[in-house]
Image 1 (cartoon, rainbow, N blue to C red):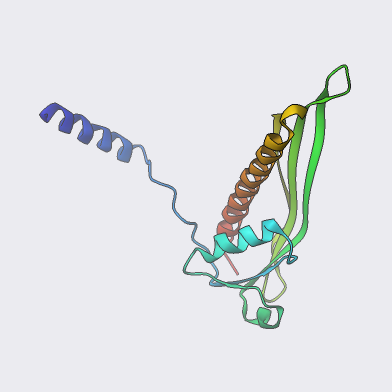
Image 2 (image 1 turned 90 degrees about the vertical axis):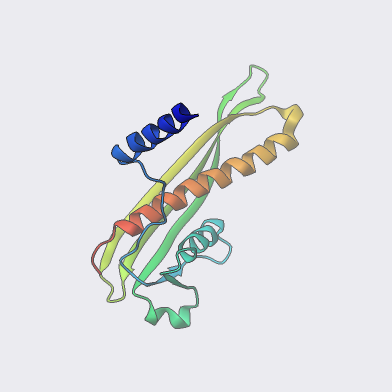
Length: 165
């Protein structure tokens, strides 16, 4: 029993000594953000939810109240693509690649560009089988959701890297 406790304490000391810590919500240099995205953008909705989950930042979505925001996030492009990677000799699709490409910029309330126009692209490949078309459609939706989550995290890290307003 003592050996187990000793090993646990030793492992804890080693992990804390190497700088390991759990991922935390990013800290932002601003307290309010106006998120300008199309109403039907799934990415825009996910980004608003993620930023709003940080209790220290107020997300403004109403254009009439945008003057009160310290920064303005503009989603300039949100594009989903599906490409055929390989086909069988009979012409059936064997592999697909899914892509999500977004383009955005961040401006201060005074119009100063804090993050210039930036494009982020994520992609995932997966095998396709026509006999399991419904299952593959569900897999495609899950992959798009996973890609979108990765891109939202990348955008949040870039927003957190903004130091001066």
